[in-house]
Image 1 (tube, helix red, strand yellow):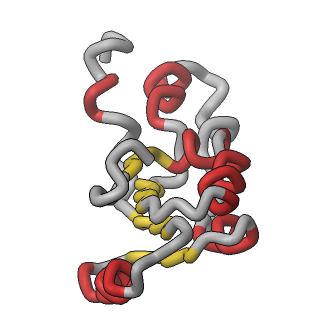
Image 2 (tube, rainbow, N blue to C red):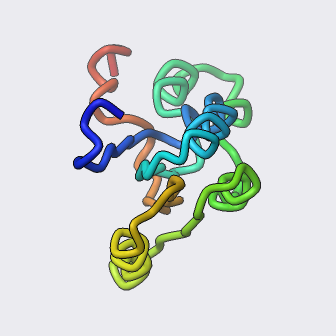
Length: 124
């Protein structure tokens, strides 16, 4: 809102997106052309490192395949699922439409065992 000529972009993980999903209502209500990129590897990255070496397993920190674009659309956003670079053509169309609501991209990424940058923090 402070820089109306610039596109705000939020890049976050799927777990963080799920925890803050209700914030989309504010962006929609204010008519913000916000681009939200959700890196969806179906797990809480930090928690995978924290619980990964234990005997409890990872069932409580991993999720099944999900469509995160659907709840975004339910909040009034545009929603897009991306599995390859070809799927990004819809982003160009959204940008050229003078958007007045957010676009949430559910970017499906390969799971590689949690957030790489937390590997050292958890002593692995």
